[in-house]
Image (cartoon, rainbow, N blue to C red; front, side, top):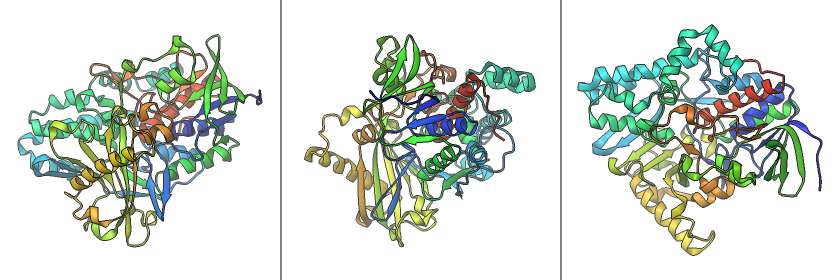
Length: 506
């Protein structure tokens, strides 16, 4: 059996969480190796090309690239790439999402906060005061978090430093940690249609209604869009992963593609390393898993004592995705990049109920041939509806085509003539995501159940000594910026454990 010389840290998976943690540790001089099953980095935050079109595999709305915030954690990508001395070029997007909602309720969430709130107040003039109070609460969360240095909630030294240097802010944030976005909204707002809008604001990135979404998470995303804003990486989402790989390798890190991990080696409750699909074993002082909590403890660790029952958390849905190359004439004049379509409120949170759509080639024309656009549309989907099909079978192809046709028909509400304008179509189901992303049931990780608070989300440390978690299965949760925060937190904990604490990001 082949064995390698030990390193300080092994990272399982080159998703954004794993790559970010690896790059920060390697920059600090902590020897790190990343093993990735695929031949590309980024996981759901990657790009792929077909016939001259470049598509985002998953993530398409990006926070964290702002350059106007001098303190805090919310422009994390800017700070991380500054630390790695790597440039990622981006273009600002004036609108986070253009919502197309029932009863003709259309509203763009502008970067300019006043324009957004004025537009919302014009739709609900009787709730104007409540609207301003609610979004002010989100701003307060943002301001507190933005003034505190990033670090692990499990790092007692870090927490002690925050408590000593920022006692009032620390107390205020701790109190807000136990509040939900939806319940806070209901303290200020009564109109049911407006509360539905607050729900879709949460669902757009948390895939849960507002009552189930922690106020702290909402403060990060829904306030940051008016501060750091939404910025799209030129070249597509894969540009973020590619830059992290460059930064990681620049400081001597090693990433091995086409190297799937089959086992985490655990002896007497301590993680010692990993075994790859080729049978080789690799050892480290610390192992970081970028896999989901179910993949980590139910597949990579063969010990029932650590098994995580599926029912312990809600499982984030998987996705059905359409990647379209279209004639540019079908995109209306002054069309925004990101859209959400809800036909009826009763089904917005059911599989397929909400359509997400992005046309990033509006911001970056290099993503499509001249006169064409790259369109990415997706809806939530459950593995149970797809696992009956055999990949490659005619029944599987027919099911994908049928669902795609129904979605395209709905999307013509804001892109008339779309079906006839398609020149390239690529479809992906939960089976596709499970296969390529190596994620249990194609899921995007655990969600908190109603009544659970944000600190009940899995943290970076795990029940196995020297095994850490990063990604959307770790606090704070889903979304690229949240995953990045989990990576900074994880790297901070691991570096302090290994006796070489990270410098705070500047």
